Length: 436
Length: 140
Image (tube, rainbow over all chains, first blue to last red):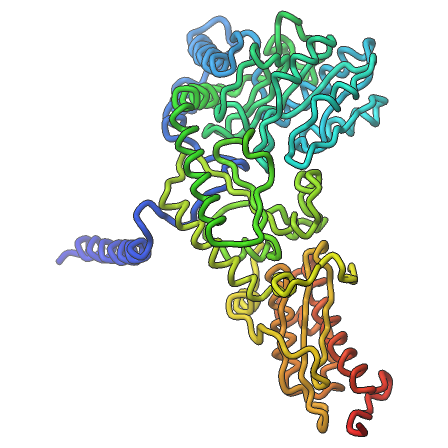
């Protein structure tokens, strides 16, 4: 035996050994389940291999600057960007010229809100939003307040929906912008966007929506939804991180935005900077796939989500769903497992990636502001888990996740003094707790 | 967040989960924390009236893994100790033993509070003076 053969055999046997260990682990797992399971698709999504494949050439041979107008390298890049612009436009029902590529939804939200606030400062200084928005909207509004703008943060109802009547009542003659998210990232509720858009158009107010969780998941159409400005990002729809876009309406009404980044006048002057061609190609492809597969995928995810929910409801008591389930994203389930603390629940299911309404891991120790906005007590907010089902989740995983969560919830309730007291008929609200 | 092996061990195999008869004179109960803060601990001790030795301890905790581990450890530590000895257990001992990160120190404080509250409850029931720790329970 030559040394080389021996080495090869050694490496083969060690690989076989590793393979055996892995297959042993998987043998005990049902088919279709590979640990860890990713079920946090509102945070981000894995890239679809088809998206990656579309992007790869633009990291290599096709490297041109889309703004280079006088040679083939530039033309090829520009062509790719043009195609992506069409793919994105098709998904939301606008024209390609109305798409401004950005680095992601945080930038898009900043550009939309600050850009409109600055451009229409003469007309008014009042902005209306809601308390359950993403921080990219809330923090931007807070910044504008420091600059003399007035912002109304509308409350939401206990089901997470904003009241159009309350919104209407909040409008003043100084209102220039309403910004309400399409679908919520924590509780998955879908706001009455078309109705809000209609109201804004009647009043001559611009309407922006952070549609990060909605585009590609549910039908979004800027015409029928009466949307003037819309933010989205690629990485929530199985595309790459670091690229997103802002839709800016060009007619009825023509929306103007003060640019926030200067340097070359790219993207119709609204967003300077060399275009991220591979990222934009990925965004386009991700939009195309999402549009093509939306109907089937919505049905599949809704079924999986309802199955997950039913499994919990069949076994556990003291649980409830957060957010209106009639106006809801297909892949979202936000559930409170009352009398169990969320972080301890996550610890017991550490081979599953989900999110907790408890922010014990953060420095503030504050539970989710979105859940609190629904009127949930801190104790219930601490007990909440967000399941985010996505394109690559299957039924076997849902079974694994639900069984494991049920086991851990039962284990923790055995240990929970609150669960014991409630079972004994003690009213927890009557106890004088020593808050610390 | 990464948990220490000891926290994981107490979380997965908690010691002394359960309850003791709250109405018994030998049992002291400490209920500390609040649901809205995300931590509630109930720690109970059963004390030998003759020797003042803690012969049994039970807990139930609503809280994060570190809170569960802190209270589980507390029951282990108080068992076999006298009331006076148990009073010397401090939260810093718990932090050290479980390698708790700074953001979880409040869990150890709560466990110390729970021990003291349980002892306080037992003393009150048995008319033991807080300062001296002298048993007058034997008198009745």
